[in-house]
Image (spheres, rainbow, N blue to C red):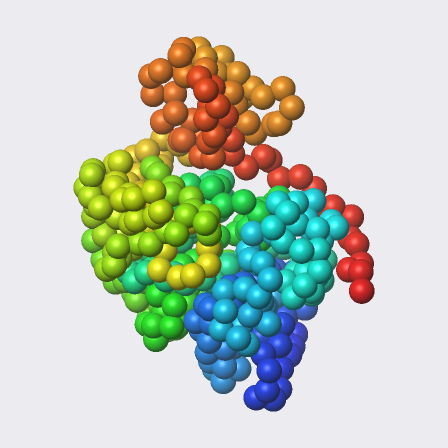
Length: 403
Ligand SMILES: [Zn+2]
């Protein structure tokens, strides 16, 4: 229910430095909460610009709005310098332990430094929005890529996230989110909020701003914050449908090439997101020599920037009937008995993790487990540990950010 009377706008003034809250709208009644985060990586300003455009249009056109819509800037310091990050990656430091003590567990990140402050401030703002929420909370995390190509969405593969992601019309890629550790999306997922990441195109391409703007409009309609009949929503849906073109609706990761700084990794020039690649094709080089594709499929996120931990992903189409099949298996709670399969047992300590004996479970157990959302895997000898997002745990008690 939406009343213009209830509307409250808070618009940050001044043309100076970017502020944490890019814009905010609330109508004071119960309704959905839609949070857009942009610029977690400082070399990805397109989301910030796209969000500013949406807030400007909303301000001028004043359509009926429902619930709360808020746009937040991620790494203000890095955005000001147009760098991915200053001291450490603000999208790899959100494990629960890290957030609790602001001491990133992996050892590469200092407990102080620019991003520790950015994380504290962003977390405090997020918690304020979560605390105010009186309906479903949706989070859209806007990014861009160093390689060119069509926009796409990534998500922790739960049914609710999937349903939300499909509204955006671009290809949704399963298995990226689960393979990156400590992302903000991971953290938000554990609160049980619906969330997806949106990769809007190449950094600094003007079309990427248009795609980010379109994603925000589509998100506003998909969450129920605005009516889906708005002309901006209609235009945005068409734009994103067109941007996908003939690409598959859903794809899944078949291979991730992780890199470390010492590898001297260099991608061969000219690869695009979704470009077809063949087995044996030369993709990159590092200090050990040539890196050739072990699988055929499509290239995703070729690494053409200085900082980062992912060289590239190889993805393949995930056919729509498998999407339906996996939804059905999950609704039937097939996961509750999956450890009855030969060679599959539950991890005694970690819910959401299965131990696969590869000598026994040779057949298509992995494909079946993928359908159930188990996408993160680690091989140790004959054993494979495979996990998925654990069921959301209740939000932790609110903590005041320390000074
Ligand atoms: Zn990013």
